[in-house]
Image 1 (tube, rainbow, N blue to C red):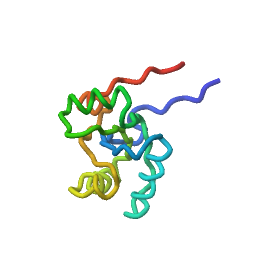
Image 2: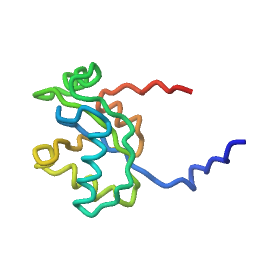
Image 3: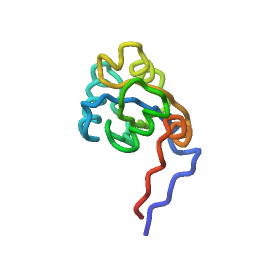
Image 4: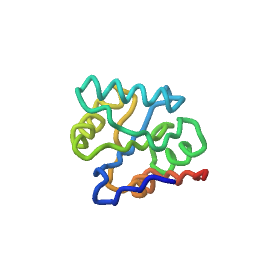
Length: 129
C-alpha cells in the first residue's frame, strides 16, 4: 500500500532556479558537489534538489545556448530550493561574479518549474514509470 500524499497546502513551498553552467561540469554529481560547497561556504541550507542537468555540449544545451543567444556554449541546470532560503540562494548565484567564481550563474527563477524550462528552452524530461 502506498503512503498517502500530502495535500498541496501541506507541502513546503519551493522555488525553481535556472542556472547556466560552465563546461567543467560534465556530470550531475560534479555539479551537485559544487552547489553544496557554495551553499556551505555561504552558510546556507544545503537543502536543494537538482532537477534537470544538461551538460555543456549536449544536444539540448547546444540548442538552448543558441536560442538564448549566449556568446559561448553553456550547460544548464534547474534547482529546487525551499522558499525560506530562496532570497539568499538567488543572491549567491545571481551576483555579477558568480559565473567567474563558481562556474555557474542564475538566469531565471519561478515558482513553477515549467516556466523555468520554457525560459531556458529546455525540454520536459521523459518519465520512466
